[in-house]
Image 1 (tube, rainbow, N blue to C red):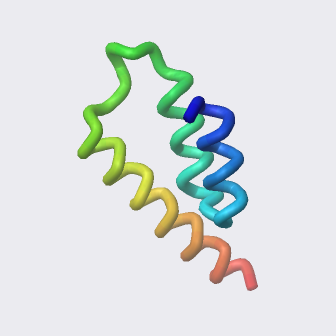
Image 2 (image 1 turned 30 degrees about the vertical axis):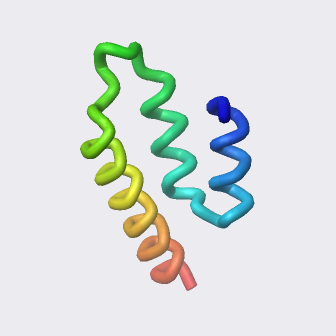
Image 3 (image 1 turned 60 degrees about the vertical axis):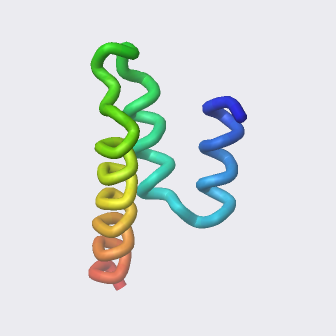
Length: 58
C-alpha cells in the first residue's frame, strides 16, 4: 500500500489525527523518520489529542 492509499484509508476510518501525522512523517527525509515503534506511538498520540480537541470544540 502506498502513502496516498494509506492516507485515504485512515481518513475513511475517521483517523484524521493519525493521517495528518503520517503525512508529516512521510514528508521527512528517510534518515529523519522515526523508527516503527516511535512512529506508532506518535500516530496514536496524535489521534488521541485530535479526538480530545474535537470534543472540546463542541
